[in-house]
Length: 201
Picture (cartoon, rainbow, N blue to C red):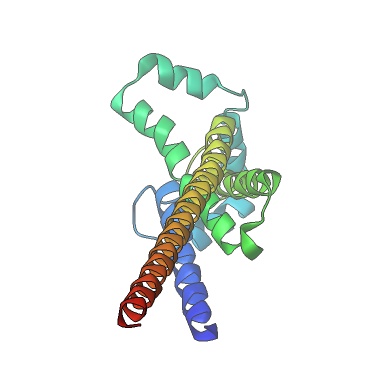
């Protein structure tokens, strides 16, 4: 039992690490190769010359729902991917948080806070490394994605619970029917035995 739990925890942690790698690859590197030396070079350059960081902040969006409304109005291929992609990429994060939490007891506030924190770190990293732009709407969409993952997990847990309860009830009913049938057969057997004995007497 302990060995199975260890294997489960190891596989789950490995999948979570792979997921985080994919998130950073998609958001920071835009599907390109994860280049750590490049990040180090960007960090040194930007800290030595903050004008790069200042430029990123000047082009950032700090107005909630501005980018979202623009994406909804234009609905071009890029805008649709940006709108739904920012939500969907954080759905697994909400599910992983629940799976990794002790007895899956993390609250909705905990999931929202952690989703927001991860999204904020990614947005700030884009400014710090000058490889993207800060957008408050990305924070909103990412956090909503984490919340959606929490809801998916709760729904699946409730559904599996109902299936287990239904299976248990079905099994209990089958056991009850079998027991009743056995008792009935036993009673019939005793009755036939008594009848035979009566005829012989």
